[in-house]
Image (cartoon, rainbow over all chains, first blue to last red; front, side, top):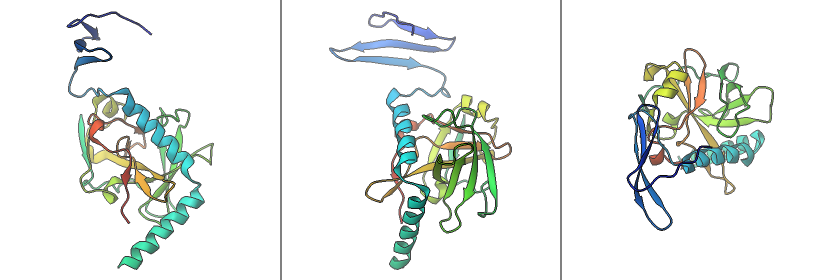
Length: 82
Length: 145
């Protein structure tokens, strides 16, 4: 991993059109300004982690048989409400 | 960038009955499951509109999925240019969307709207994407009865 030191208001550039600038430094956090083309997704790392964890939960939450049973229960409950 | 909305008719490309299945290719796998590459999408006879996404080579690796139009009427996400290029998508109408369903310990079903699976209905190429507006999308959207 490339590690760079930057001071307040200094930036790094990735490729020709992405710039990341240090806009504020607090005691335990750094605020970054990202300039990138509108169609480039810029996300917090947590978003990726959230999706990965959701996939793992979906894969491990139940067997196909358990899921089928639950879908049937929901269907029955929905029919009973009508 | 393409804007995908749940109001769009997304059923095209989905299997209409359990007797038919649609094959999808995942060159990058799913997030966290990068080794899964090819899947069959199978309709569930007694629980439409839910489908099974069954990955080939590992029968235990199945995901319950549903098209978002059946879960919420206000789903809208922005697909970045890299995803559009990878999927060879130039029109939103060629894009199919599926969302992974999770059965919670309390029996509730939730849908991941934050990381949708987008596929090209013409080619069967598929990819789990992180939309440009992912931060505003829920990862555990409840499925109403």
